[in-house]
Length: 66
Image (tube, rainbow, N blue to C red; front, side):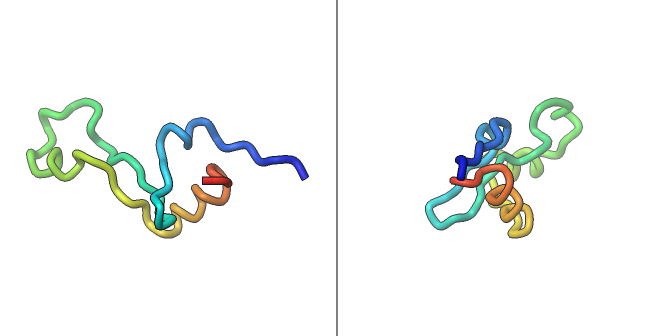
């Protein structure tokens, strides 16, 4: 059985925590920041844990060995 390839775009965007959850970047921090509230910019600062259904898809299809 051949090895499965990981999607290179997903390797750049997600990483799996030691407990098996998928961590990703928060959206909405690239441009037009002047119209965003200070609270939104503060809460979007770091990374976040993906929801369970989305994390299952990322682990199954995009990062099979992650």
